[in-house]
Length: 313
Image (cartoon, rainbow, N blue to C red; front, side, top):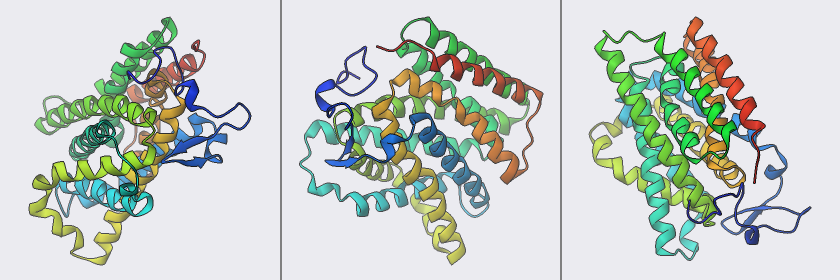
C-alpha cells in the first residue's frame, strides 16, 4: 500500500490521464470501455463468475481432491493469461516480479483453502466465513466512522449466516470452518497485494506472472492426482470451464476494480459475494438458506449501503 497516497481512492494523480478522457491502463494498453461501467457492477459480475465456477467445481471433487481442482483452476488460468498477455515482452523490475509472485501465492492459497472448505461446508456458509478476511482489511484500512460501522454490520451478517448454520460437533464441519477462516486470511492478503500490483502498473501482466507463481507453488501437492483431469474429454472441459469462470474472468476484472477502489471499499463491496454464493448454491447445488443466513444478508446489504456513503478523500 506504500505506493498509494494514504488518503487516495485511486492511483497517484500523475498516473491518470486528463479528466474527460480517463483510461485505465494495463500492461501499457488502454482499456476505455470497461472503465465506463460502474465498479460495483464489475465486481458483481466477477463474483457471479467466481461462484458459478465453484458450483461446477464441487461436482469434480468426486473425481479428484479439491486441492487438485484448485491447482488446475490456477494453472489453466495461468496458461490462458500467458497466451493472452505474453508478459515476457515487458521490462520487469525485480520489485514488480516479487510483488506479482507474492500476489500469486496468496491467490493460489486462497483458492486451495476455499475449495477444501466447500468440500465440507455449503457454498454460502464457506464464503461467509471466508469473508472475515476482507472485513478485517476494511477495519484496518478504513477512514472515518462509516467504514468501521459498515464493517461491524458486515461482520454481524457473516456471524448470523455462518453461526446459526454450523454443527460444530461434526468434525467435517469443524474442519471446513477452519479452512474457510484460513482462506479468509489469504483473501485479505490477496486484496492488499493485488492493490499494490495494480498500483505499480503491472496490471493483467502482473496477474499472469502471479498465476504462474501460484501454480508452481502448489505443483508438488497436486502432482500425484493431476492427471485425473484428463481422464475424459468431459472432465477436461469441466476443469477448463472452472478455471476460466473462476480465475481468468474474475481476477482480470479485479485488476480493474482494484485500481478504482480503495482497499476498504473493495473489501466492503466483497460483502456482495455471500449473497451471490447463496444464490448460486440454491440454484446449482440445491443448498437452501436458513433464517440466520437471510438475516445476515440484510445486515450485509446495509453495510454495503453505508459504505457507499462513506466520505472520500
